[in-house]
Length: 127
Image (cartoon, rainbow, N blue to C red; front, side, top):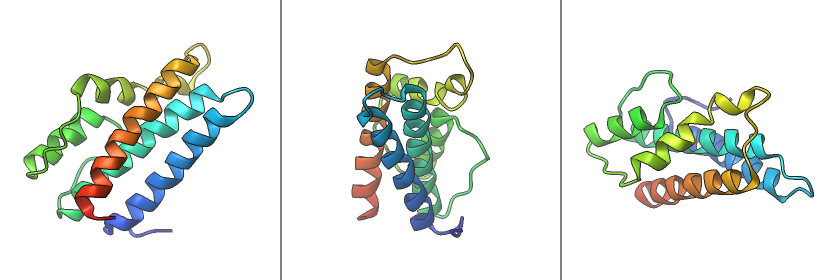
């Protein structure tokens, strides 16, 4: 198990979520809720990696808007669309229950948002 005080541990976990999200969409029958959930988890863990790298703490939340705000307070301007982050945040819980199945298009969009977060954080941290 990784060290929660090491930003690389957060990135390692985020990468696993990223791979799972991608794999979920590559199946013959896409696993849409898994793709959305793991896209959200990827973005969440990447934002937490930023905060850990800068020595900031954060509450145990899945709210990407709050994490983005904490990054801003830490002097990190992530420059992501708040509406997009909000869309992705909803997938932390909403898709975990029957009746809330996202479409393939929504799932691909969720992964694209996660990719944007991933790209920014990796560049910012030089990973």
